[in-house]
Every structure is written in C-alpha cells, then in structure tokens.
Image 1 (cartoon, one colour):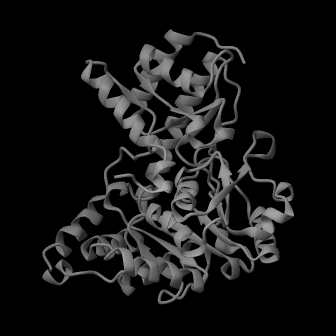
Image 2 (tube, one colour):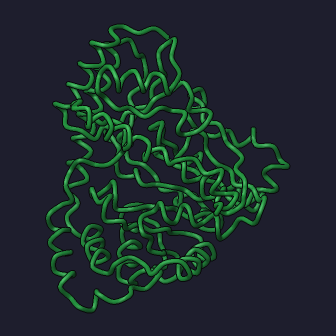
Length: 390
C-alpha cells in the first residue's frame, strides 16, 4: 500500500536524523557532545512539578479534557500577556490551549489552506511551517532571511501576485535558527502588509523570554491592529524548561482561534488537565527561573562566541534564543562541515540546509549543555580546525 502524495514528498524530520546520528555514534563508544537540538538541559522548576504532583491525584483530571483547554489555564495565559506585554486578551475567545505550540503551527495550515493555496514561509526557518502547508495540500513561498537584512524578510520583495494568493504568513522572532530579533517597527509593517493582502500572520514566539544583555523583547500582538490579522504561538517549553510536558497556546485573532479550536476538537482530546494546572503554576508562580536561565545561557553564549572567534569567526553575538548561527568555513557546505565536526570532534552541530535553501552555508549551535561541556566542545573543534578561512 502506498502513502498519499503529501507523505511521499515529506522528508525525514531534521531532528530525527540528528537523533539517529547521535545514537549511531554512541553505539561506537564515542563521547558525543550534542549542540544540535534546542532542548533545555535545565530541570523544570520544583514548584511546577509539585503542582503537577497534586493535580495528578485528583480524579477529575483523569477524564477527557476540553479540546480548547481549561478556561483557568487560558485565563492564566491572558493574565501573563497583560503583565508582560500590556495586551488585553479574552481567554474565552482569544486563547486556545495546544499540545505544545508545534501542534498548532502544523494544524493552522489545515484550517486556512485549500489545495494549491500559498503560505509565506521564512527561509531558513523551523521546518514545521512548510511541512504544515505540504500536508494540508498548500504550497510554500519562501521568504529569504539574509544577514544583510538582519535576517528579516523583505516584504517589498514578495511579488504582489504571490501576496494576493497567500493566506498565511509565518514569522518567528526571536528567530530560530538565526537568533535574530525584530522590533515593533517591523511588526507594524507586517500588520499593514497583512491588512493589504488579507493574510493571517502566524507569529511563533517561544523565545520571547530568552533575551540577553538587558534587552526586553516585544510581542507581535503589541503592534496596533495586530489582533485583526494575527495570532501568536507560544509555549512553556523554553521559558520554563518544560519541553517534554507538551503544553502551549495560540492567542490573538478570535476567528483564527475559533477555527483552530474547532479543528482540534475533531482531531485530538486536548492537554491532560494536570499538566494545565502545572502550566497555571508556571505562568502565575515565581518567575525567578527565567532570569536564572537567561544568565546561564548568556554565559554559555559568551563561551561559544570566544571559541568561535579563536578559530577565526567574526560574527555578532545573538541577543536572544539559545542558538548561534554561523557561516561554514571555505571548502565546506553545511552537511559536510557538520559531518566533519561529528566524525573528528565528536560534536553535533545542525547543518543550516536543514532549515531551507537559504540556510545552506551556515550551521547552528544550541547552548544546551553545561559551560564545561561547551568549553570542551570548542576545544575539540579547535583541535580539528585550528584557524579557519572564509
């Protein structure tokens, strides 16, 4: 039996391949330092775990949850947006709970794209943006993110006939994989563009609280008129070290929130309620973990930047996310350089071409190992590479 056309064109997920290569290397007895996957190595805070421990013994939480999430959790999300960004959200109509934001990012394409419809997708970008369009029967128009433009898409470069056919636009700031940030002025331009062409903007913002050097980052929903044209995806994964818990949300335009919730009601049964109560504790409880995480990741960033500069890289340190995005040296492409570093140094980095055509020539480092292991990783790389040329 053959899978459908969309599945035939679906590539293996980037991080599944990385996990396979890691397992193969470890089977050979190689001490691998994994700088490939953006999965926090810090534990979930104890007060969140304690709330989960209490909720899990409540029999009321053992039944089917609401597909759109507990109103209490959605209210906690709305309260968080008000405190953090001074944004007013109606938790009943402008917030939907997700099984991690990845689920909603994939499903939004099913709610808006008919066969052949266009989704505007950043390149390089999180692979799920384009995969969602592919599985829904739509097609992606790739918006190049280039260093000379601060890794922001140039809206004026999108052909007007493409813009008129587009139904969705995905954005992601702070950005994975580049670490770039965007200001409110850029978001205002995007709102105007979306109004002009009747496009739903889907802003993916899981790294909004992972900022360095004292900067404070905006939400897309702070742009005037944003709720008329946009939803914002967020999760507890990176902010509270809860990647494995699988809880997130979408917030913003009420029509899009209703459509996404209606889709979810037909394909899943929602987030386990005990996890939602833990999520409420995360959003409303002590926030010390956020500052502590940022301090630790900034220290690791500085170690990594020192290691890269010692080998000859001259790049700007990112002010957000726990990623470094750097060009490969002369004589390599993304894949061959990543393979060299794995085979010769026992260090996993992510080849940039896994994020799209315009990721070719780059690689990504995740700051998700201890400072000591980070130092060891760069010592190994220096031993292999020495000084590099570009």
